[in-house]
Length: 450
Image (cartoon, rainbow, N blue to C red; front, side):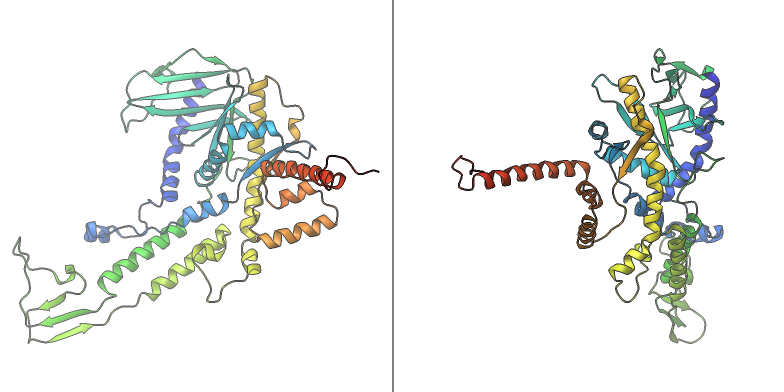
C-alpha cells in the first residue's frame, strides 16, 4: 500500500500543472501568448486579454452528441431495465456529460463504483485533478487508484486497491501552496481499511485519445491550443490598433502642450486617448488629421486561423462563425458535419466500453457475482446525426417496408428506451380498444356472433 500511495501521489502532483493549464483554456482564462514583454509593461492595466473561446466550442460540439440512452445485454432486443434504473438513480444523465467534458478537455475522467444498503450501487464521476490511477503493464487493466482533496488545512485521500479501500488524512496541516510529501509516514488512517469484496479496483477511467503506450490519454484541445493562442494575440492586437490607429487623430502645432494636473509634467502625445488632439509647441499654428488605419489585415489573419481550427478539429465552418454569403442548404450542412459525426461515433464506441465496465462493476458490487453474459453488454447511444424530423420519418417508413422491426425503427427515430416502452404499452392499449370496438360496436356488452 505504501509504495502505491507514494507512486500515485507523485503522479497526481506531476500531472496537475498541465491539467490546470488545459482547464484554463476550456474556461477561456488562459494567459496571453506571443506578446512582447516590453509591450505588456508599457501598456500596463490598459492591456486586457481578448479570449475567443474556440476551445469550449471544440469540446462542446462533440460532447453534445454523446448521450447514453440505455444498455442492452447480449442478443436481447430489449434494453435492460435494471441497469437503466441504476443509471437514473445515480443521476448519470447529468454526470455523464461532465465525465465526457472533463475527459475531452483534460485527457481523462474517472468513475467510481461501490455497493450500498439501499439496493442501488453508488456511482460517481471524478475529476482528473483529484484522482489518478495506475495500470498493469501486461493487461492494461487498472491495478490501483487514488483520490485526494483538501478539507480545511489538511488533505484527505482514498486509496483504491483490489483487496481493500484505505482512507487517509495528512498528519499535519498543509499550506495552500505547499507540495504534499507523499511518503507513507506523512499520512495516517481516517478509519480502518475496508475490505473490497469485488476483488477488482472499483474505478473505471474514461480516457480521451489513449495510445498503446500512453493510457493516460491526450486532450482534444492539444492541436487547437496554438491556433487559439494566435487568434487571441491577433484579436488583442486588433483592439490595440483600434485604440491608437483605427480612429482619425487630429494634430496641431504652435499651441501649448497640456500638463498633468497632479504632477505638472507634460503629457506624452502617445498616451492620450483616442479622439484627443496631438500637440506640438514648435512652429506656426497649423492643424491637420492623420488617416485612420484599416483593421482588415487582422480580420483576414483571424479568418485563416479559424479555418485551420475547423479543419483540425473536424468542426463545420458555421460552428466557428465562418458563414458563407449564401445560406447553406440542408444537404450542405449535413455534409459539413460528416467529420464531426464520425468523431462522435468513435467516442461512443470507445467510451461505451468504459460505461459497460461501470455497469458490470455495479452489478458485481450489488450482487457479489459477475454479470451473467456481461461480456456481451452493449451501450445504447442516441444518434449523433442531426436529421430533420421529416427526413428521419421518411427513412423509418422506407425501413419498415423492407421489414425492419418496429422497436428498431423507434430507436432510429431517437426515442429513448423509456419512451419506447411507454409507446409500446400505448400500442397494446389501442389494439385492445380496437378489438373491443369490433366485437361490440354499439357498446351493449354482447359480442357479435361468429
